[in-house]
Figure 1 (tube, rainbow, N blue to C red):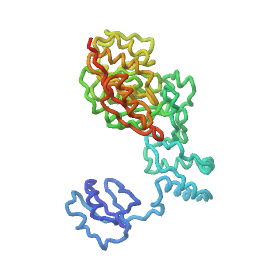
Figure 2 (cartoon, helix red, strand yellow):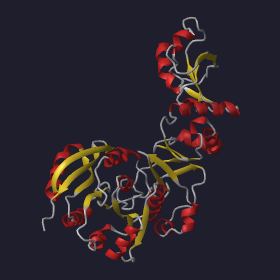
Figure 3 (cartoon, rainbow, N blue to C red):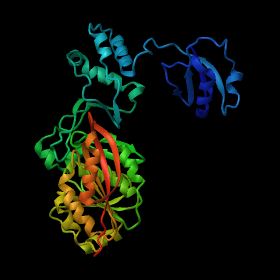
Figure 4 (cartoon, rainbow, N blue to C red):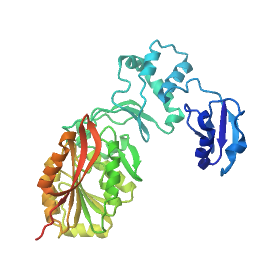
Length: 414
């Protein structure tokens, strides 16, 4: 079959447009050692001339040929399943059903491939994986589709009633995911536990984040809200309070804006991820355990040393007391990012905003039925001040939205 090969990536769109309908929809453009192959559905050049393709191109254009993939009409993982069975000479009677129920989507978090909750879940897949599982997963990780990825897991929903948002139900299926979770490792991890655990990373909006998927969650769907936070204005001496910091979903964005951030987080694994993310993004931090003293002198000294992230490894019920040592703090934003509800921190947020020397915007996260969003926003206005914006972040369940209500708290006039 015919392929058109260009050596300048900027020419791909132009050449594809000129080729028109003969461009193959089954195969995407591929980069082979700096040359970009555009695959066609024809095996001759009768209706094409190089001259008609190269006019105005920045680089060279030439013809090539390729063997058509008999599995090209299949989805990527379906194709790999077919090739795996062919490579082993295996005859599996349930192959058509396996092909039909093969996962079509997944998420890549270096170095882990994460499949959705219903992936490989039926009886036929259980039987297939009981016989071929390790070999099959090793085979697909060797394909260029998953280049540089070494682990595979299946995701499960986070339990809403778990205040530390731990991924109890994530299922590792290939690769060494470190020590088995238990209460002691969850609640009192040692440095050895951190070192032996399996860690993933992602870069969103240019910000690096890291977490241990067996011990803390990562919400890919928050990327829209993180991007919105990056658009908030912060001045050099502005303070931001993140009452549910996690691994730094929003704190890292506020720090990128130039603010000094005070974080509260209970999960020691999230704190370790936050620590790694802060360091990787070039932010100096100091972690305070519940027994550590926090004074104005200590704060001022750490500020002089360049610390911009103050992390409190304790419940946020202590936030008001902890920050009472600051003189006329300029609290620009307070982030209440716990789902399904941050209700337990509303009172503290209100008290903190009242102590601020400038107007404070409180960002209230909540899971709300689509028919009750306006009502909830009005309630936040009554609770805190003036509603400035309601952001619909993502759907959480049918007709349930993760929303953020931005409320301008009343400025303390005293």
